[in-house]
Structures are given as structure tokens and as C-alpha cells.
Image 1 (cartoon, rainbow, N blue to C red):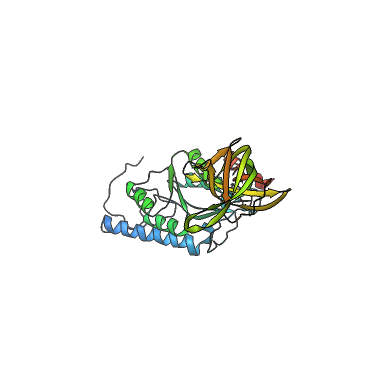
Image 2: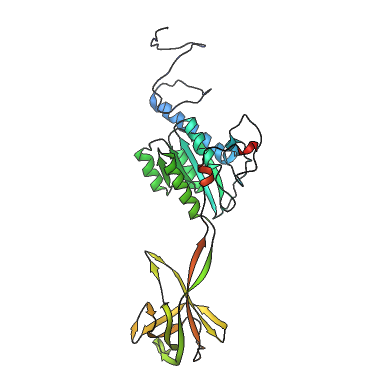
Length: 327
């Protein structure tokens, strides 16, 4: 076996081994010799910036959409499954039900493993756009691109420098990094869940019956109509806060089975005290914003509008690789 020898220069056609790169080079990559480290860093940043523009404008194969787990695949056995997908162009206005991703990994195999998972994710309700993917550390150009396209950066199997973390935080770019792929999958599932479409469905939290209608004098001699009520079931809320989030609360007035009004509670009293809620079987008085035509015997129903949302299910993508294209 021939002993390795250090050399200071290599003429054309010389087979050499170069050590000291902080990121792995791809096959057929070009290596340029420069006079100093500062020049090398500047050229590397320019190259990264060039790749970023390709991802955004020119190379639309970097921006991919998969409309389902089973179709839109070109049957080219020389390509990875996630490379067989049809490219699409990003809209100027982003859909609220979409994920925009910038993916970085340390080596080609790690990148392909994570990209395979991403491109098997369901897209019947949430669309996925990969604005850029590549090998090597996260750069300032990546942060700028993610900020511009409102993308989250997922980093697999690499450390992220403190300066890049600080830059991402300063530019409101969410950067998720882990060396365990299942942890990144959990983060991806949470991202998908956060942008899933939902419907607001009313839940009746309490009912009250109007016993008396009276007029009150407010500020600046304004008069308003209040309904004296007895709580029949549950709880009637003026407002409801869970954690730091205010819930969507309203009341509707029902007379002989017909809904006359639905809107926000203006004031809610228990005796002379202003309260945020009243529980059955207590008495209370209530005024509604935009309604004053109360009659004795009207029913007042308190409604909590809660989200109904399906689960963003990534279980198919997490399974061992399927040969579904050959089925």
C-alpha cells in the first residue's frame, strides 16, 4: 500500500485527498483554491446565496407539492421517490393551510431520509412546500430566505451555531434542530396540526329564563334594557379565558323556538356585583350588545364556539419505506 504524503500543490490530473472541510462535499463538487480563509468564506456565502435564489426562482424542482401519498409519481427507477414528484410554483399569497419548509442536513443520506418522510406526508388538507433543501450548515442566506417565504427551518443531525440561532430569533424564523429524526417528525406533525383547517361549532354552556325586563340608566343619561333571569342549567359567561387565550363566547335569545338574536354579552350582574360568569340555579341580570327586545319567558343560551379539527396524521410517512409505486 502506498504511503500518503503531504504536498503543497497539485498539478492537473493528480489524485489527492483533502482534509479539514467543516461540511462534507458532494460527488463532482468543484473545489477552488483561494488566498485566505476570509476570501473562502465570502465565496462560500455567495455560492449559498446563489443556491437560495435557485430555490426561490429558477429551480422549481426544489419547491415541491405532493397532493397525496399514492399518486403524482413519475416511474423513473433511477430517482428517489421524493424526487419523482411534480413541481409547482409558490403562490404570491400563502394559504393558511400550508407548511413552508427549508431543510438542511449534514450528509446526503440524512437529507434523503428526511425528505422521503416529508414527501409521504398527507396533503389532502395541508399543502407542503419545500422552498429549499441542501447539505451543510444553516447560513444567513437560509435565514433570509425563510424569513421572506415565512418558512420554518428543519435541521437534521447538525449543530446550529449560536450566531445563526440568534439571527433566526431576531428575524422571527423558527429553527428546529435535532439529531434524532423522530423528534423532528414530532415537530413536523405539530406544525401540520397547527395549520389544519377547522370549523367553529357552538356548545351550549348554560341556559337562563327571563323573569323580568327593566330599564336602567347608564352613563350620560343613556338608557338600556336589562333582563332579570334565573339560571336553569350550566354556566352563563360574559367572558371565558383559558390560559392567556380569550375564548369565543356569545349568547342567543330564543322565543317560542325561534332564535331572535345572537351576540356578545355587554354586562352581567349577580345581585349588584359585576361578574364574569353565573352558575345555575343563581339569579342574574344581563344586557346584550345590540339587543333590547326582551320578553318575559325568553330563553337565553350561552354559547362557547369551540374548534373542531381533525388530526394531522403522519403515521404513513413514519412507517418503513413502502414500495407503493410498484403496486
